[in-house]
View 1 (cartoon, helix red, strand yellow):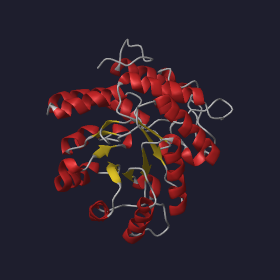
View 2 (view 1 turned 180 degrees about the vertical axis):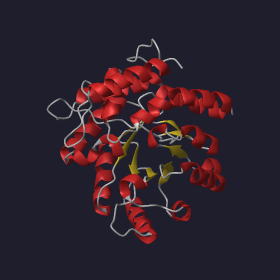
View 3 (view 1 turned 90 degrees about the vertical axis):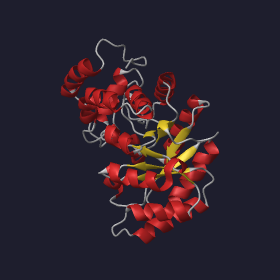
View 4 (view 1 turned 135 degrees about the vertical axis):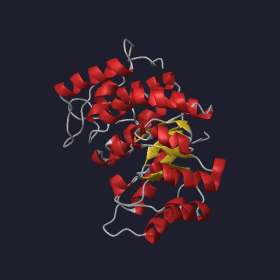
Length: 303
C-alpha cells in the first residue's frame, strides 16, 4: 500500500477498558469514524498513544486491531524507543503486521549530539523496510534537531517519507524545509494543530495530530490549497479555544472528547496518567457549544 504523507492523518489514542486492559473494539470504532470523516490515514502509538505504558504484546494487539479495522486506509505506527535496536525491532514487527509506515523520534539521551542522532537514524533506515516519518518533537525527547541536521539526514539517508515538525516555533523550520525541497518533501503539522494556521501559511502539507475534530483540519487544508487565508483564520479562531483546552498535559481531555464522539467506550488513561473529571466535562460542553453547536458528535460534523 502506498503511503502518501499529506492531508490529514490523525494520531489515535490507545483506548482502555475500566480495568486498563486494551479495548480493541474501540480501536475499530475510532478508525471507522475516521474513515467516515475522510482522513488520509491514521497513526497509532504516537507520543500521546501511551505506548510507553504498553507491553510488547499489547503493542502488537493495538497494531493488529488497527490494521484489521483500517482495511485500505494507511496505518502509521509510532516505533520510538530507548535504543536504536529496539526501534529496529519495533519496525520489523510493524512491517510483519501490515503497517504502511513508521514514525520515529530521535532517542532521548542525557547528552545528545547531532552525530548521535544521525547515526541513530542511519542504523534504523538501513534495517527498515517501511517508509519512515521523521518526528521532530523535543518536548518528549529533549533533543533539538537543527535545520542543518535535518537537511543532512534527508540528503544522505534514504527511506524518509516525510517530516513531522513539532519543535516550536514550527513555521520557520517548516518554511526552510519547503524552500529547500519543495514538493519533493512532505512536511506535516503536529502539536494538536495549535499552530495550524501559521504552519499552513508556511507551506505545511497537512496535519498529523490527534485533535478530536479532524473535520476542521481537513477543511483548513482544503482552504490552504485555495489560498483562502481569510477563511482559514475564521475557522482557526472558531476551534482554537477547543484546540488550546485539549493541550492540557496528558491525554485525558482528548479521550473525553472521543468518548463524547462515540469513538471509544471509556476515557480511561492508564496509570499513573491523570484521569478526567466533572469540571473537564463542564468546560467541554461550553466549548463545544461554541465550536459545533447542535451537531451530532458521533457523526462527521459539518464545517
